[in-house]
Structure formats: structure tokens, C-alpha cells
Length: 384
Image (tube, rainbow, N blue to C red; front, side, top):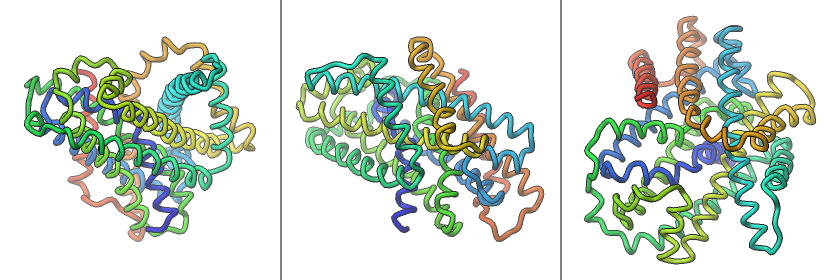
């Protein structure tokens, strides 16, 4: 795999790795590591296959900068409208969340330096600067994301170096809550933590000279890196904290505070990791929305910049408190966008018997049925 494809895999991974990294131990620990691990692997498998279906649809339709073109060529005008509606709802919600999170980090950072930015100033500053980076194109985002991703992984490895020596493996198999329905409900958090399919059309366009096999491996590698990170982190955290203690921690800040008692270095490293995870996720989501707007409206960069960032910024400035409740619905939107829409696209293309030389996701009809059932499982888990 060349550096361009490697960078594209890291964009997929970076888009997925975010707040879920620190939330996963808190939601899974009480059910025991065996069940948590099995559920996480299942969610990763289903999400990866759905991404491969989207890759198949993108390749067979000749690609495009965003889902807009792929949806129009496969599902017609009704499917295009539905896909765009779901995509905009999801990406704008996520960008609002990342702007709010980044503003908090900027405020804390500037306060440590001896001066303060208000939340409004921090949000505007972050959006302006990061937005300009997005307008530079996928190539610039790729190179910057590689550097940030490796620093992020380095901070995780250094954190683990503090935690692994103190791991108590005797508590890893404990099950405090045998409620299997409760375990299934965590699927929403896990699924959102693996969600990165929205960047695939942009990356196919970016890697126009790559073979179908290389693009397939790009998606698989980009999906497996978060799984490995999540599992290693889960075992390290649960090996240092008992599940009952984890269940009492309120949010990411609480988890960082608990580990700061072990070492001040851990708190600093986790803060670094959290900031970089948020930033790489922002770049992936913002790139997807920016390219979607370029694909849909065909305007210059200045207009596309405004279309991409004005609404999320306005939302984060005017409706921050109300917006936090809206995030609960992001998982349901993502199920339709990342599972059912690609499934419908591929079903239409295979029914029309698109040329056999194009990439076709493995598994045939049985895996298509599995993907349908996987999407149904995710919907049920979020509506329980």
C-alpha cells in the first residue's frame, strides 16, 4: 500500500476515532469483557461490510466527490433527495459537536497560557482556521491527518505504557450486569464509534489511479485500526479500574480525572489524545461535507466554504444546549445513511448487472441479507 492509500486509510480511521474511544470502557465494562469484545467485533464487521458496499457503488457509478452523485446515478432523484437529507442532517450535527468540543479545548489551552477566549471567540476561531485547511483539498488533509494520527497513536501508546504494568487481569472477566438487553443498547455507541463511511466517495476520487483491490484494502485497514485501538484501550482501562467504579464516572472528564490520580502524565496524554481524536474526526466529517457541497452546488471554494461551515457554526453559537439532545438521534440517521442506503445502491446496481470487471463486495446474496439484518438490529437496539 503506497503512502497515499495509507493516508486515506488513516482518514477513515481518524474519522471513526473520537469520543467513543473514552466512552466505550464506561458503557461496556459492566457487561464483562468477553461479551463487550464479541459485540464490538460484530459491530465492526457489519459496519466494514456496509462500507465495502458503498465502495462498490462508488466504483461502479464512476465515483464523485460526494454521495450526491452516487445516489443520483443509483437511486434516482427520490433516492438522491433522501440521501442528501440524511447526510446533511448527520454531518451538520457532528460538525456542531466538534466545534463545541474544540472550543472548550481552545478555551482551556489559552487559559493555561494566561489569557482567555470566550466560547464564541473560540468557536469562530476554530471554524475559520480549520475551515481554511479543508478548502486546501484532500491532499493537504491527508498529509496533515497522517501527522496528527501518528501523534495521537503515540499519545495512546504512552498512556498504555503507564496503565499496562498495573493491569489486574483477574477483574477482566467480571460481569456486574447480566442484562443482555442493556448490552445490546450499547450498540448505538459502538456503531457511531465505527462510523466513517461518509468519507469513502471523496477518497475514491482522491485515489483515482488505485486498483479495486487497493481501494478494498484501504477500507478494511481503515476500519480495523479503530477496532484494535478500542480493544486495547478497553482492556487497559478495565484492567486498572473495576467496572463498578467505571459505571459511576460521569463523562470523559471524569475518566481523565480518575487517571490523573495515578500520574499527571496520564491526564496530559489523554487530553492530547482527546483533542487530536476530535480534530481528525472533524477533518474527516468536514471534508465529506465540503466535497458534498462541491459536488452538489458546483460553486467556487469561497461559496462552498460558506455553505459548509456557516450553518454548523451558527448552530453551535445559538443552540448549544438544545443541540446536545439532538446528538442522540445521530445514530439512527447513521444507520440509514451508512447501512440501508449503500445496500439499496448495490441492490439496484447488481440487479442491472453492471460490468463484472468493477469491484463487487464479497459474499453475494447471503451477505446482502446479513447487511439488511445488521441494519435492523442497530435500529432495534436504538429504539429499545
